[in-house]
Image 1: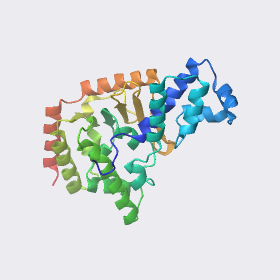
Image 2: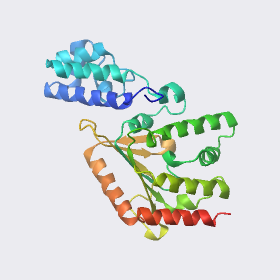
Image 3: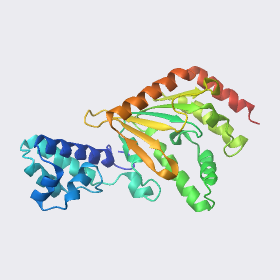
Image 4: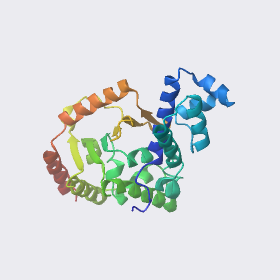
Length: 288
């Protein structure tokens, strides 16, 4: 049993439930306004549910929706009720670090089967050392020691997914600029580079370096992450960190296809895993 006690993500379960309820409504040839009217709900309630904008689904709401959609199969109804109950639990990130890890990303990571990331200016958060993360947060103009320490603890806790039992496959393409930027100074950066090489030795982790000599490419404006799931009812999600503009979570098939094509290009253009490890070690040796 893991420290958090969960072998699934309530975030993913809630998302799965929202998608299923939308499909049931469409199969019943009913629009969201008609569904809300039949249940005496506010017109926007069904829409919020289907957009996964509800925090803690209630079993009664789910049963009411299944009833008006005429979903009578016992196994299907029981599965939806189970999803509702599992969706109501809190993940460790909500229990321990709600003030820091309040977004959806950590919950979506927790149950992902494959995670593919591209980073332009920073080492991916799942691969950062404590000292490197500290320097990143200080660079973001956080100056008080206590908040920085808590943010670093949360980031390291998030990294548990890579070393737990049955971890996801994590593949990172890192732009050369992120490796050459002296975040925290030479000593911090040297240890960070050594850490990358150690993590790349794990069977579930692959790291490639995209050299500056590649020139212009398809992802020069921002980094992104592709999250894939084992269950077919959980569609792929594209996460784009948009800074002050907020995070983006994309799952329309055309958006997913575009980012997959971009990632394929990045992997094909980057150094091989072996050459990347040698390159990173070489950079570390240059830091005095």
